[in-house]
Amino acid sequence: MAKKVRITVMRIACHRDLMEKYEKPMEHACGMKEGMVFVSEDWTKSEGMCDSAWESLSPFVMALAYGAKDIYDGWMKDPSSAMISCNDGFRPVSFLLEAVD
Image 1 (tube, rainbow, N blue to C red):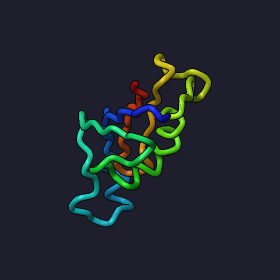
Image 2: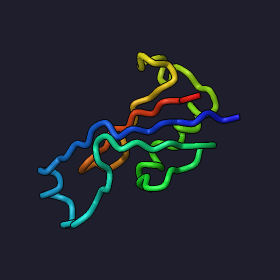
Image 3: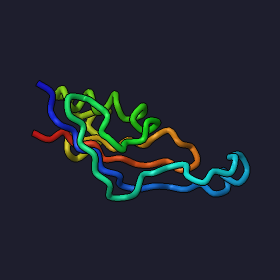
Image 4: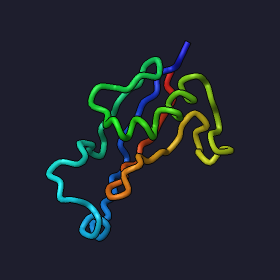
């Protein structure tokens, strides 16, 4: 049985110089806010989770949900967690993933 995985938005970076130089103007590019929390059950995308972020996170969510530990040879203090960023090069969002019982 898969564990739940808590997904917390920890930080949102913004590379304005890259946005000004390369990105088409956008009114609403990212709906994530620091402190938002999502819970994935049975390795499913939570409602409200960004589709693009989920593509980056889902392999790690799956691994943690099914008991993986020490992802990337133990770089996390908590072996049942991972810090993963989405693939947005203009405003990357850092997510803390934690397996919960």
